[in-house]
Length: 142
Image (tube, rainbow, N blue to C red; front, side, top):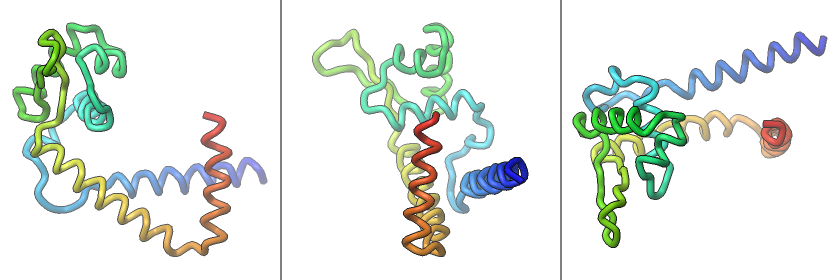
């Protein structure tokens, strides 16, 4: 029985994750469908890191400095990210999303969070507390 319930839980969690990854309808930046997983990971890292330098990105993605540089060159050429020089030390260059892409990611995040919140609203407060407690246990094991 334990193995059956484990398989059922895993199947349900994977289904929830897949459904939450569906893209919202509407205007999305051109070329998004053609992005590689590595390019998307780079964009997400830049989005969620305050001041990302090239070395931070290469470390986060497990790339050599030259590979990270080529990746950034392609993202800059596609108007996905921009290089921003530091105000006090001209040797330091930060990576930031372009305003267009930043708006897109912010909108997409809000839509996805809203969908997840709507799904959680079908649960009682006690169920939500129990789910949160169980997820915290699983998260602690990661």
